[in-house]
Every structure is written in structure tokens, then in C-alpha cells.
Image 1 (tube, rainbow, N blue to C red):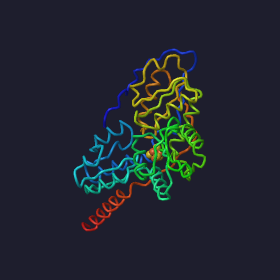
Image 2: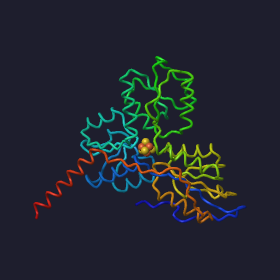
Image 3: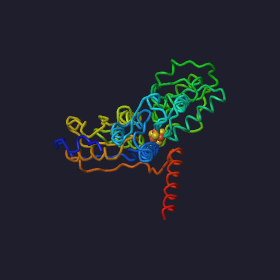
Image 4: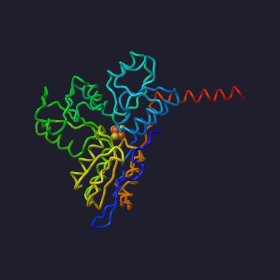
Amino acid sequence: MPRIPGASSRLQDNPVAGPKRVLLAAPRGYCAGVDRAVIAVEKALNLYGAPVYVRKQIVHNVHVVSELEAQGAIFVDEVDEVPEGSHIVFSAHGVSPAVVNAAADRQLQAIDATCPLVTKVHREAVRFARADQEILLIGHEGHEEVEGTAGHAPERTTIVNGPEDVDKITVKDPDNVVWLSQTTLSVDETMETVRLLRERFPNLKNPPSDDICYATQNRQVAIKKVAVGADLVIVVGSANSSNSVRLVEVALEYGAKAAYRVDYASEIKQEWLDGVQTVGVTSGASVPEVLVDEVLRDLAGAGYGDVQEVKTAEEDLMFSLPKELRKDLEGNRDERALGGRRSS
Ligand code: SF4
């Protein structure tokens, strides 16, 4: 297992005017979709042996990716980099039908770890396209999830990056438009984009339910509550993790005097703590708790040992493993049971 940088506190205990404390946001860290995707790769490695190929980062976290690499996963950008007949896992962010077809053309054994909440958005895109509606997909161009969703209705989808894009987009029929969104956006900014879109297209239809997922929403609600009383907010998460980056923005918007994103505790700078009494801590949906523990340990070393959890929701959602994997795991179990009976 790769060593976590910054395992011992390098931060100094600077004096400040009053008592120091940490407000620890909850929920934080792993969501059900990330948990399922990471377990899927681990189970695939156990079942089929290394290497198992993974298209794109299974989840957007450098630590998780390096741990899986150490176990034998090979991350690729596209399926044409994978030897024919190999096992490939599609990441939690989802893929377009073109990618599924390209994998089938190479006789790859695909395991689809797309988060079921992303699959729900894919289905909506297909349904709206079949009904000949134009889809305004609010999300970041180039993000894997947006590429995957747009790829389910490429002829009928226009990507709207945010409020600043609303005036630039063109549609064929302004009375026949519906919006969808990436699952990991800022709730407030997305609602602002929808408001501006509706000003331009008064007959804009809503999707049947919110696309921004429960985990993204819950982590934003929690950090809003923490940020109000925080001099500094530290968000643990990777630079390419959309929901982690949004947490920094939301913290600043809701009153944190400063907010930074770090992959590891070792990235916390001593000067961030100057004059700071209250530090807010949270983590993105793709971040294992061990990385938060390291941050808390370093902060404790700098005098912030009083940790108060600020909990705004309980989470108990779990997803079953991808069906391809379940089938092979069951087959394997049956075979072992049969082997046991034969030898008895
Ligand atoms: S952040 Fe939301 S959509 Fe993305 S994997 Fe987690 S639960 Fe699924």
C-alpha cells in the first residue's frame, strides 16, 4: 500500500487569541457510487487476477488510483489501449454507447461500474431524445460524466457550462427544451443556470427529479453549516474531483475566510493557520477516510485537537455490485461448492 505523505505532523502550534477547534463536516467522503466502483475493481482483481484494465480513473482521487495500481489495475484513456479479450472496468462517471461498442468490438470483458445515479441521467437523456426534445445538459465540458451522458443523445444535446454560457447557446425550437445536469455540481449555481435558461426559454421543462446526487447535495449542506463559523476550511479531494472543487467554492460563498483543497495532509501550509481559531474539514465523495484522519492528526499537532462533528444528514445508501461481476462471483462460488462436494 502506498505510503500516505505527511503521516507525522509538520505543523507548529502557533498561539491565537482564543481556543482552537476543528468543525468536522458530516456527511463527508465516500459515497455509495464510489464505494461500489472501488470494490468492483478490487473484486475483479481477486476474481480474474491482474492486470484488470480500467477506462479513465475509476474515481477522481489520486490516492485511490495509486492504491489500485499497486494491486494490479492498469488505467487507460481509451479501450483501444487494452489487449483484446481482457477485462475492463468502466469508471463510476459512466461511458457513452460508443465506448461500450468499441469495447465489444475488441472482445473486451466489460464490467460497468457506472454509478446507478449517473445511469439514471443516461436513461433520461435517451428518453428525451426519443421524444424529440432538445436537451440542455448543465455540466463541465470535457468532464467524463458529461461526455458519457451527452454520448447517449449526441444529436440532441447542448452542453451548458454554467450561467455564463446561457446567452451563447442556440437551440432549434425554444419551446421544446428540457434541462439535465451533471451529478456533482454546485446546487446553488445550477439553480441559477436554470433560472437564466428559463428567462431565455420560458417553456423549458424540468427533469422528473434532481440530477445532482444525494451525496453531492449532502456534502454541500454540511460544509455550508461549517463554513459560517470557520476561519479556514480544508477540503480533502483531488483537483479533478468536481464535487471536491465545488466544496471549496461553497465554503467560501458561505462565510469561510479561506478555503483550500488538498490531496494529502502534507499539502497544508503553516501560514494557512496564522490567526486561525476554527478550522472546518470535509472531504469529497471519492476520498477515503484515512486521508481525513491524516489531516486531523496534523491539525491536532498544531493545537487543533478539539474536533466537533457537524452532522446534517445520515447516509445509508448502498448499491449492489455491477451485474457482470455478480454473475461471475456467483459462478465462482457455485464452482467452489461443487468442487467441495466432489472431493468429499
Ligand atoms: S458523487 Fe453521486 S453520482 Fe457520483 S458516484 Fe457518488 S453517488 Fe454516484
